Image 1 (spheres, rainbow, N blue to C red):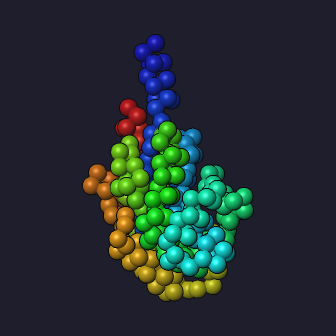
Image 2: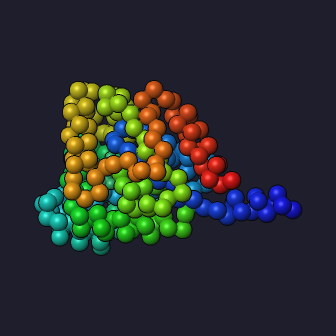
Image 3: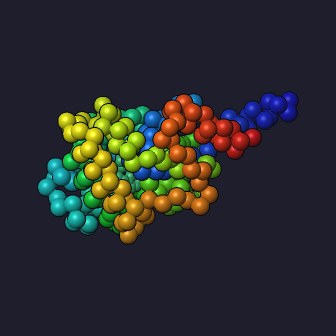
Length: 230
Ligand code: DC
């Protein structure tokens, strides 16, 4: 009886799991796998910034036109559930993973009004729990009270190697050196911007994934999740 009650509690308790970190740290694969283990939704917030950036470029907006891009972000219907990314009904899953989209996304992510709109959406999506949300500011800004906070990191060299060999990132004729350069530029943009720069939350568990296989990273996170559920 007591055991049944315990199981019911565990089944009902739906956590918010925040996974932050720089590009190429392994957030995507890890967040997806953890969400599958738990039957949670996986929300890739970077894809939201990417989709807005792509639509802004297609609409001919200047990427530093804060008001116009924020308006677009506010009225666009964006879905990122289940690995398919769409904006206003258009499937942009592949289109948002090009080197140009990388740059455009980093530009719009610097705009405070755009962040305000997307953070509000992310809170709406995740507030009921049962979600693994990945990004740069999930544990610091979007859900500072998240149940589990992870900061994934890896050496710049390893992150460039992973990114260069990631088939999801098209337009990848560039060699690893070019990818490393682009990643460095993006790291700089993400960590030095005025609003919500990439930082490690004080209460986040930091995992250096440089020499870790994905499964080991997932196991580490699942252990933390189980501790929380118990
Ligand atoms: O995780 P990603 O590479 O797909 O993110 C795309 C861009 O959006 C990247 O420049 C970082 C930015 N971003 C952000 O500022 N805040 C988030 N929560 C997620 C991504």
